[in-house]
Length: 451
Image 1 (spheres, rainbow, N blue to C red):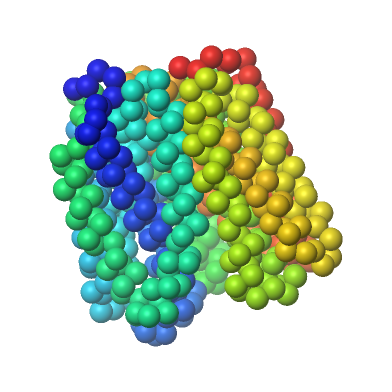
Image 2: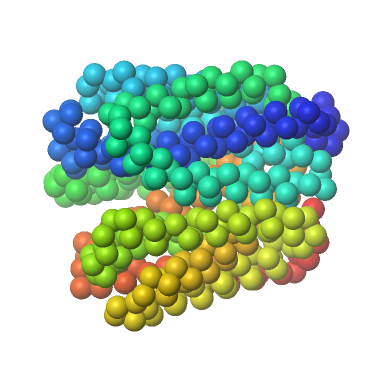
């Protein structure tokens, strides 16, 4: 094992693996959303049910993230990453060949397991690929790829669907997945391994604590009986309590409660969740605001949504370099203050704004988000022991998924319960959560030295 990162050229090929895995999971997730109308038509499935093509992927990731992070600490991050890439690639092939709705859902679930394997140890692997002095730069590179992939996803998906049917959204993943899987076996670094037994009871409790509330929320849209919904919510809370009690009793819990006892990790995870709530609110509400409230066409909506992820892509490598010298508390607080300012300015747009008025505000939001994101991820991973890198990586990914899911749910709540507020109400709420994230981040200013 390399004592301090990989040497060249192996580090280059390891970065190629990370890039391929990030691109196919990020771009693939964005592209499938565009195909939902076509899938609904081809499979003769109601729109309320076809959304499970997207939902099942995210639910499976949420259920598998922490168990696979724990398996990464036991069997090695490289092993989990390799099998994650392989399962995602096989799942993509099965999605492309799906002849029925149920088959497609099953294939998407397999894709979700593969994606969870990749996400659960992604940042942990960066720790062993880069020398210690360049960790921030490595995380910044990873954030840059995510931002660029998110930016390119809708455009690439539209181009594919304009010349080919929806199965090609999955077919394009296959050659990249094969290359990434082969390179993963050869280039990724080994990592410390734990001898602990896998906590199967904990994995089952996570599935129930996550799955039941999601089924209940979906049942609200289907019009299920209120007693059934109440039972699902109550059981979800009960299993969550049992999960926490079960994990607290274990010396190395699957749900990394031991790491959350470290103040800098706990505060960084809370900051991350609050900031991703802002992103979840914004990326769902802003298209409605631009299209319905301002009356812009879809091409203009796509144009106006682009500056945010582009600014993240520009800011991420810069903040990665800065995070090797300055604390996450200082950089994160500055970035989130800019994000809060940008959200407030979006909420205060005039009734008929020019495109430029929107573009520079979106860019300010993306700049602040990019300045915060990399130092925050670095703080989580570098303040965890090396043998708990999988748990730290799962915290980083889990806080992102939790924040995005809560943000989207809050938009749905506003649209359903407070329709008079509309998307502008969600944007104001996003500004409040950005301010909250800034406040939580400022509590880390006592930790002035980076690890």
